[in-house]
Length: 82
Image (cartoon, rainbow, N blue to C red; front, side, top):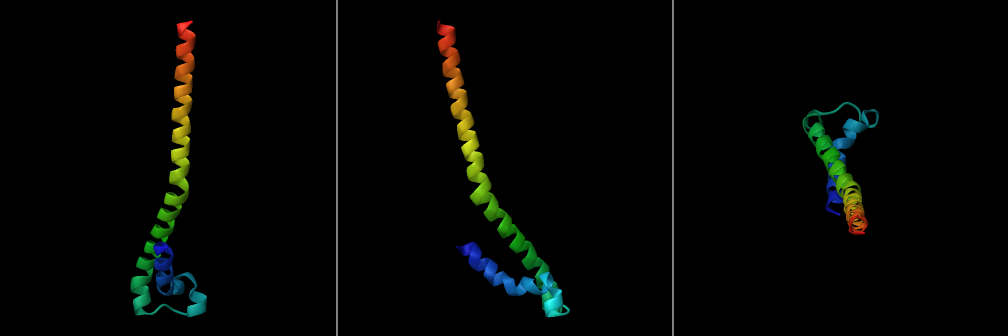
């Protein structure tokens, strides 16, 4: 939720850089703060995607791998005991 509000706040700073044909040449403050806003915007988008999509997927894969190793260890323990 806070990421969305931050992205909305950065939109006026970044749109003249992303769409120069609509806004004309960049003025002094847009030329200074626009690239900084673009970096912050990209970082927020990247961290949000990594946190919401990649991290749970990696956790699920790791959890499934640990479960499979435990089953394999129990299966091999039963075979050795016979």
